Structures are given as C-alpha cells and as structure tokens.
Length: 402
Image (cartoon, rainbow, N blue to C red):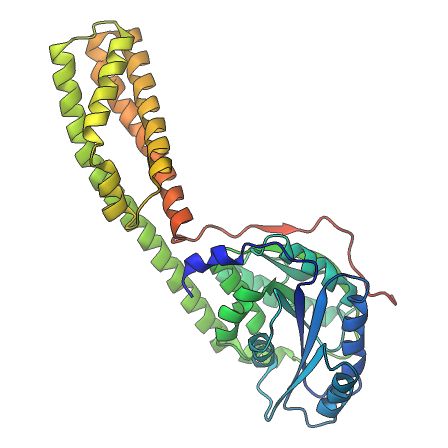
C-alpha cells in the first residue's frame, strides 16, 4: 500500500467498532483460559465489540484444546488459529493480524504479565485519530535485577542503532490502527521477539504517532528468553538495522534531490525576476520611494512566476500542487519580497533597491519551499517526518488484582 494510504487511517472509532486482540500462545494451557476471559471481561462495560484471536504457535501441550473450549463458549467473540509448528511470537502475531477485522488491532502476551485493563485505554487512544499506535511502557516491574538490566541494555542498543525514540520496545502489549496492522505488520519479516522492534519501525516509517502507556509488569514466571538467546538474534537485528538505515538514506537523498530541483527552478525564476526588476527600476527609478520599489518588485515577481506553478508541480515535487494553496504560499513569498525591498529602499535609497530585492528572494525562497513541500505532502505523503512519541498523561496502569 502506498504511503498516501496513511490518510485512509484517519477516522474516529465508532461506538460499536470491532477491536481485535491477538493472543500469541505457546505451551500456555494453564494460562490461556484466564487470558481469554480477562480480555473479554475488561471490554464488557465498554461500548466496543471485541474479538479475541488466540494463535496457538505449535504448542506441544493442551493449549489449543483449552483455547478451543473457551471459543465454543464464546463463538461470536473468540477465534482460535492453530499453527502446526512453532515459529515464534512475531509469526503468531502477524498471523492473528491477518485474520483480524477490527478498526483497532493489537496483542497481549498470554501470561498476562501486563495489566489487561490497560487495553481499553490504549484502544481509545488509537481510535481517536487512526494515526496513533499505543504501546505499553514498563515504568515499574518486579522482575529479578539481572532480567531488568539485560532488558534495559537490549533496549538501549536497539534505540541507539535504530534511532527508535521509545522507552520500551519489548513490552508485550501494543495497539495499532487496523488498516495499518493488516497492510504493513503482516509483512514484517521477523518471527521472534524482534517483531516488536520491526513493528515500531514500520509505525515510524508510516508516520504514526506513538503514545507510551505506563504500566507495571507483574512477573509470573521465569523469563523464557535467555541472554544467549538474545545474543543469537544479533544477525537478524543487524539485518533490520541495515534495511532501516537504507530506508532513511533513500528518504534523505530524495529530499536532497527535491531541494536541488527547487533550487534550479528557483534560480531560473530568480534570474528572470532580477532581470525584470532591473529593467523596471532603470525605467522608473524609485529613488527613495519605498512604495514604488515594492510595486516594481511585485510586477517583477509576477512576470517570473507565470510558469512557477507548472515547473514546481511537474519537476520539483512531481505532483500537482493545490492551486489555492500554491498561490497563498506564493503570495506570502511576494509579501516577503515586497516588504524587504520597500524597507531597504526606504532606508538606504535607490542604490540599495537591488540588495533589498536579493534579500527578499532569499527569505521568500525559504518560506515558499516549506509551503510547497507541505502542499506536496498533503497531496501525496512522500517524505516521512519524525514520529511524535509522547508519554500518556495517566497514572501507571497495574493489574486489577495487584
């Protein structure tokens, strides 16, 4: 899906909108029933239709049958998908996303170490605009010190190499706009715990703002991922980093080429503008009359910008700019030039009129490039902006029984 499809994500969540919660599960026969019940219960008092999708990731115990038992009790809201072999948490999540139908889609770990009552809060945040994803961020937990330190170290390395501005990449509870999840997150390559990082990178690339919801993690069991297992993911992590930096480089060079085209067309317009203005002030010297100088600057600009719309639409941004927006931005550039030329001429005389014109051109160029670029992005999102990451202004969410 092209980047412009981001606009299709802009919607308000309807009161009866479906929320899809994926629960990846591997050998969770003792916990999967409680996980399904907890998710259903937390949405009972909220006007959101919910579907729970349990993805049994090749379990060797009775996880599938336990999940299926609860699905039979709740046939309208619980779906169970069985994978024949164990692929990893990321593979299970993207499988669940592929079968989801919600306007908001997310996942939570089956062990419920994260507070399930944070899910409705996150759903409301995502549903308000459709351009937001909400992720749990651990601000407190009762894990052993070694687990906390290794987790924090892994996060700092990931943030530094990938320039991910979030406090916690690995918390097992995240919510995304449904369209984004199905179109982008089902195509992620990572099948294990690195899936979370890749999903956040896709959110950054598609300009989704990220809200971090502070939560308390309750340690239920010994961590499954050992330090050695984390280190063994090094090659895959470096592969993600390489692809990410290549993407950033492509966007950077694309921006540089766009600025170059704007400068070239601007240079042509400037030469015509200056030549026309020089001719005008030679024919009707403004002396110290700032009003005349400004008027002659306006005429010169209009002569030079006759082809401006076509050139910038066709060559600089390679897409048609909105007529009204283009002329509003151009008008601002005209105003900057007129004011600069008039003020300089009024203060220093006719000999400084050309200097005022040049200064006005420089200031107007900065203003008009920014304006035209904004119009181009509105018409067809091309250059990604920095994703806005902010902390949710709410107390730390803890489990109901804590």
